[in-house]
Image (cartoon, rainbow, N blue to C red; front, side, top):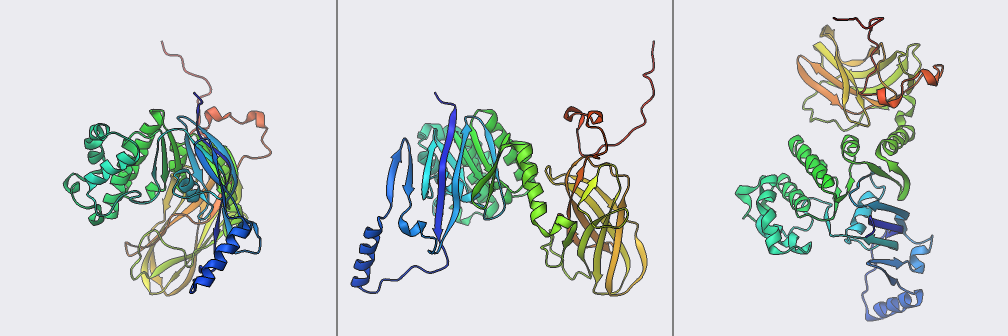
Length: 443
C-alpha cells in the first residue's frame, strides 16, 4: 500500500468577479446563450483514479474576461500520518484549497487524489443541519463519513463530553451559540476517526481553554497515525503542531518544507512587504485587541532605532536598540504608565514586558513621545514584534499586541565556528552568565 494520503497535481481554481450574472428575460436570450456556450466548448470533465478535474473553457482562459485565479499550478504530496500546516495571508487561497480537497468546490484545472476517509471542519458548523438536534447531527455526520451506527454510538459519549454540550444535545443546533456550535463541530470531525482531517481556522473561535483543548486533540489524532491538514494564522499553533508546512502566496505554492523554515520565510516576507520593513508602524486606525471606551490616550506610531537614533528594522545580537512610541492625549491627566515588550513572531510568546514607572504631573492634551532602551539585547536571532500597553490613573487606555516588526541577526564579525550549534540554542533569550573557571571537586 502506498504511503501517500493526499496527492495534488497542477491544481487551479478560477472565479468570475466584478460583475453580476446576466439575467435572461426572453427565451431567445436563453437559447442564444446556450448556443454560445456549446460553441465555446464548455467544460470537459476528466476522471483520474478516484479524483476529478475540469479543463477550463476558452472564456476562463481569456485574459480580458472578469476572472481571477484563486489557485494556480499547485502540486504537492502528503504522506500518511503527517501533520501539515498551510499558511499565507488572507485571500492567498488557503481556504479554497481545503474546499477543493473536501470536494465542496470543484477545481478548474488539475487533479486531487485522496486515499482514505475525509472529515473537514472549514467553517463553524460545516455540514450541520440547523433544524436537527446536536444528537441527530452527530449521527448524520458519521453517516456521511461512511460509519456504521454502532461505530458512531461507541464515540457518542466522548464527542458530547469533549464539546461540553450535554444539556443541549437534544436541542436544534440553530439555537446554539457560536462557541457551542464550533465545539460540537470540532468534536465530531476529530472523534469519528477519519483517515484525513482538514481543519481551517478552528482556533479563531472559542476561548483559550477550548483552543488548547483543540490543539491537544489534533496532536492525539496525529499520534494515532492519521493525516491532518491545518490552516491557521496562529504561528504558535502551526509551529507546535505541524512537522511540515505549505506557504501559499497569491494562489501559488510559494514554499513547502519543514515548518520552522517555511514559517521563517513567511514571517520574513511579511515584514519586508509591509510598512513595518523600515522599523516603523503607523498605529492610527489599527484595530485594538480590546474595546476601548472613552479612551483619553492612544498610541499613534511606533518605531525601532539603533543606539545612534537611526530608524532600523534589523539589529545585531547583543547590541542595544530602542523602542520609540508616539501617543496622544485628548484630555488632561495627572498619571501615566506604559508597558513595552517584545513578542517572538514564530512561537507567539511574549519574551518580556517592561512596565514604566508611574509618571505623575500635569499632562495636557497633545502629542508626546516616550522610548525604552533595550540594553542589553539578549534576544536570539529571529523575528519579533513590539507589544504596547498604556494606563492612565490605573485604567487601561490602549493595548496593541502586534506593531512594528524587527529582526535580530548574528554578528557578521563573529567567526561562525565560534557560534554554538543549534542544539545549544534553546528558548528565546541568550543570557551570558558568569561561569566558574573550573568545576569544583567535591569528595
